[in-house]
Length: 484
Image 1 (tube, rainbow, N blue to C red):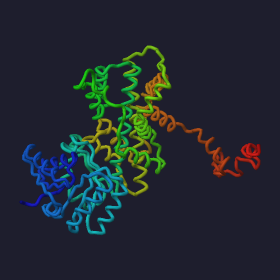
Image 2 (spheres, one colour; image 1 turned 90 degrees about the vertical axis):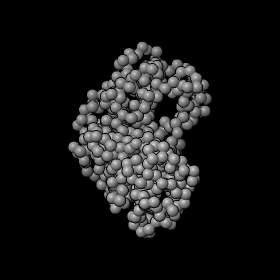
Image 3 (cartoon, rainbow, N blue to C red; image 1 turned 180 degrees about the vertical axis):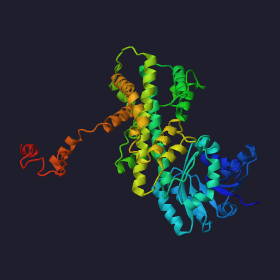
Image 4 (spheres, rainbow, N blue to C red; image 1 turned 90 degrees about the horizontal axis):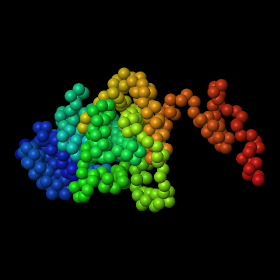
């Protein structure tokens, strides 16, 4: 057979679908998997789905030798040790100038370590975020490649065709930047996704628990929301979920799903990076904490027995007004979540010298990925207007939208609190906005306390010098208590 254009190793659901996508776009592809039945399964699918040019191999040597030079192999395996093992297997058969692309959700520092190790062997390396789930991988994902620019140019023609296509802005792929930037951007994308999903869940909870909307009504509400400024993949699938009947019993399936959310780690990494970079990301943090709390199902069941009672106010609710208020609160909170994610990326880009283009990131997220939304076009335009924008909140258009929606936002958060319904994401978003918009915070007292007990010093607002002497006197209140 003629040599193929590219290879793909790792044929779980994402790997299979991306291989078929590449083949469908006219690029013959070689595929390999340690479990050989997956290879045969993929080749069979290729035949069924249009006799696509997918060629399977059961051993790494023949797999690598089937690819034209300079060879490019995409890996889609579990992050961590499996990636290192796969690299070792492939590298043994690759030649200088060949390239390995890791398409998994990998920790960005691992990507940088591997890129350096591959460079020493004369190989090129890319870490490429792939978003969109199995459907995106098959029909067009959002792709975030970072690392060797030379390696990116090897496969740019493939990626431009394989990525999701958005009519008004082109393929949802761009060269992200050096080092582990592609993996880092994908990680934060997932953190924003955590926030988005949590905010939608809270909107559902308020409408259901306080507004007493039925699943049928919720389906109608979310379907309507998906026609306006909230139009997005997540709102679309949420509307669909509310319409799914239980095929194993009566009622709706959503009510039978255990209230315990899983996670794979990228949300946690995002929050850890926010802390390392000293970037406030309370909405994303609240979404992560909510997943932790959801995991305490048995404890929550026992706690519900201790704290029994009706926490609702019992006051009548105007359903139509509540639906509109929640819509506005969701949109305003969403702005805060994206602002936080973009600030994490901006801070890391500055630290590492990546020179990332935030507007371009918003563009490639407009299609294919889980957070795709009409809203992202607005974000792109905001960063196009001002590439050095300090915070999405202060973009003139977004600032006005926040101002217009804050009354509804506050009503929803207060209503939820008064009815005992937790809205950690919306509440954190509102607190983030209220803190950011104030020219003076009570941080002066906290810094005074730090100086009092720990001699940390402080700055004065009325003169450009550090404190001297300290706030704490020689014989302080603390010392007097110690003597007692």
